[in-house]
Image 1: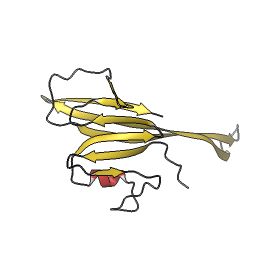
Image 2: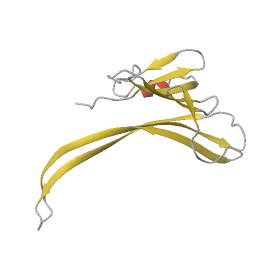
Image 3: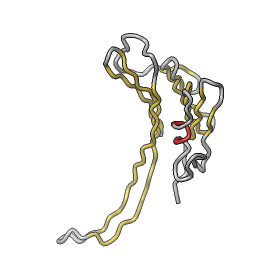
Length: 143
């Protein structure tokens, strides 16, 4: 059984429409994929991308490159952009970390048993762009 997602995304497009993720996280285009597949294959331009958990919300604005945490603008340290790019491209991914207890034979290294003990997920949003042939990116992570 898949683990329950803590943060759910909302993708707001420049045409005013949006895609809001639910805990089922199933694509309407391909039920074997996540809903983010629908964002990537919408043919639309993402204006804002947000992650929400109860009353907490982190957002990246892909028109300006600004990040917001609970509505407050946040400046991230990184390379200063020499100008405004033609466009900011969305970065979004989840990174799972899982811990396991492994029992093995000391002499042979043969694994006897494995038991999952813990797992957690970190969520990353951000942007990437190119200006004068140089690549830039910024990401914000929450767990």
